[in-house]
Amino acid sequence: MSSSSRASRPPGPRTEADLRRELVDLHRELVRWGLVVWTAGNVSARLGPDEMLIKPSGVSYDDLTPDAMVRCDLHGNPLEDGLRPSSDSATHGYVYRHLPHVGGVVHTHSPYATAWAARGEPIPCVLTAMADEFGAEIPVGPFCRIGGDEIGRAIVATLAGHRSPAVLLASHGPFTIGPDARAAVKAAAMCEDVARTVHLARALGEPLPIAPADVDALHDRYQNAYGQRAPKGEGAIT
Image (cartoon, rainbow, N blue to C red):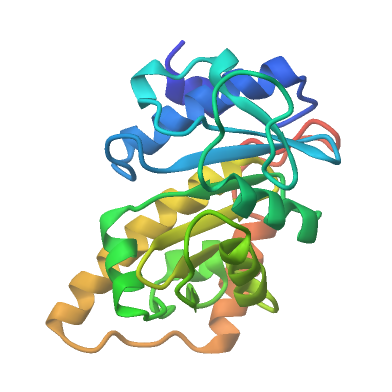
């Protein structure tokens, strides 16, 4: 079974071993979609109410294994001996502590989305695909130093009142959230795709905005009617 087919399994009850395997597959999805280079970027998954699993710091994507994923508390502190967690672990932990509906967090430096972040500019909602996935523009938050929970604070504050599962941090790059890690990875891939398309559109002229009522209707359809709906309790198949 390929990594992409494993990553496409419907969500459902997950053991820690399941989550560790899934995180390896999802990190490979970041490589597959061209969202990361070298060892940059990371995916995490909530593990129960007070813990998470996250990529180890500075480890090649080719070398990731289920055992390499680092179990941390929601302040980013490792809970067992072994590899050090990502330098973004405090950021992820802050998001989980303050957004209880979030089950997965992703950070990349994907080139087009990061180019918008370098300009400190939100990506305007001028595409139906943006209305579907993000329900509005992709907002931009302030510049923050890496290492503590300052970035997490900026993510939570910037997304307050937004439907978007993606946020750009100025001069840094995109962070995405989701009800699980796979949804957050999907948002990261979609964020880069629309960032590229809107960039190309602006090279031709000013993109046409979509009326707010149409954005609302598109977002509602995509979130509630699109795709195959699995029976309650079995997760959605997308």
